[in-house]
Image (cartoon, rainbow, N blue to C red; front, side):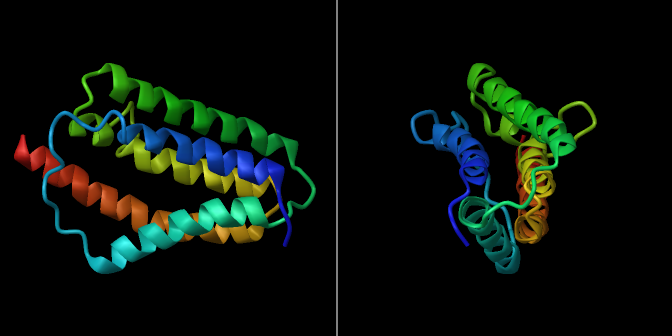
Length: 151
């Protein structure tokens, strides 16, 4: 245990764009979706673990080759947030497929945290990212399906 500035930077970079929803919420309402409580809990626990474990577990030796996938996934994540902000701020843009990636705003944070786990030699962060994936990906898929069925 200890403070990891690299891990904290990764966590902050993934958390920051979501904060954009406060001043710039979707112009269309989020459709009701039936996400099982188990998935909601896994999603929230995974989010909490990824942020805290990234920042509070000292990294091992940095593995430089994993910096590139981390940066590419983070850049894609930010590009998708730009698409949301400048594309009309609809809920559909929060879930819309990008290239071949379904629910990319759920996939890319998981990819970032998994890449960060490898880059930082932090197996606890890898476990946290797997917990996040187990909740966030299916919950987002259910929300996306509800949004598509509405429109």
